[in-house]
Structure formats: C-alpha cells, structure tokens
Length: 218
Image (cartoon, rainbow, N blue to C red; front, side, top):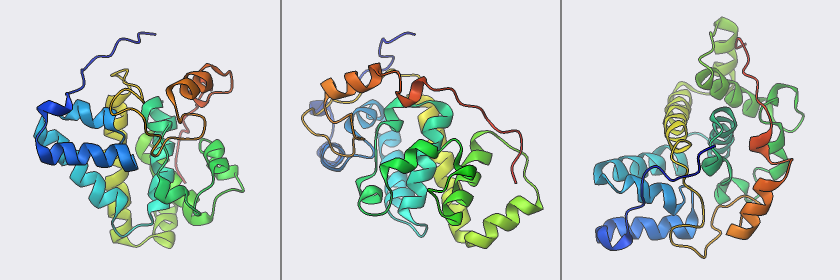
C-alpha cells in the first residue's frame, strides 16, 4: 500500500491569524487534529466550511454529542479511515462513552454495550454508509428514539463525516506531524508517534480486521 502523502500541509506561517487560532484549538482540543486542518488550509473557504460545520453540528447542536461520536467512529470503521478512527472526542469519552464500546461498532446490533437509542443511531449511520434500503420499520425505529430535528442534524453530521473520512483516507496523512507534542483527542495507544507505530503494527489493530456491510436496514 502506498504511504506517500498525497496533498501537503500548509505551513502555519502561511495561514491568517484566525486560521492559526483554529489550528491551535485543534492541537489543544483535537477533533479535528491539526493535520487534516492543515490540508484543508490550501483553500481557506474549505478550511472554514469544515471548521464551522464541525463546530455547529458535532461539538454543539441538539443531538447528544456522544451519539454523534459513536456514529463518527462507525463511519471510520466503514470507510477504514485510520486517521479519523484513531481519534476520540474527549467530550464524549469523559464519562459518557467507554473505549470498550468501540470494539463492537461493526456488530452493534448484537452488542450489550449500547443503549437502544445508541443502536438506532448506529443503524442510521449504517444505512447511510452502506446505502441500504430502508422501510417503515426502520423509520419507526428512528422516530421512536429521535425527534425530526435530531434526525436532520444526525443525518447531516453522518453525511459530513462520511464525505470527509472517505477523502482523508486517500491522502496518507498521519498524526503527530503538524504542531507535534500534543496527544489531544488521540485514542489510547496512539498518544505519541512511537505508540502509534507500535499499535498499528499489532495484529489486533482494528484497521487490519475485515468488515462486512449488511444488505438491508431494519
């Protein structure tokens, strides 16, 4: 597999003060990490379109942030975006989600680690990710657990993160390459470049495991 980076990082000194402030937030808080933002910085409009949308429909909004983080991680597994899948929202994992829940994402329906509302959100992410056919039963399940505004925000967020992750996975960017020295929002085992390399070399590394899309949604 090719490892050459496909689009370069924009140096901080070539960014506006406002963009540098957002990059500092990325380094301090993560999600997104500085590397992906440094790629989008080639086009300031793209940089801000993502940063503002991510703030408004992921970090804030009307639907539970932890629910959206689960959906984001499901998409990471679905499109195999290692850059995105090796991050965690500190806000979501601070007393709300547990790392053990990330192990059951692909087989979430059979897991005992999720609430029914969380499973419904993951079913929504699954249907969008794999372009599944849906029926009245599926939508009854969605409306049972979410209001229409929540379904709109969650759907828009899943679409946003799926598009970004499907693109970022092609670029061969990696963590700890821009504004190094911070472990903000990194998953356990990925806090440093050395730890990241060790974890990715393990035979149990999540991206080495196969994934099987389902054929229909319910």
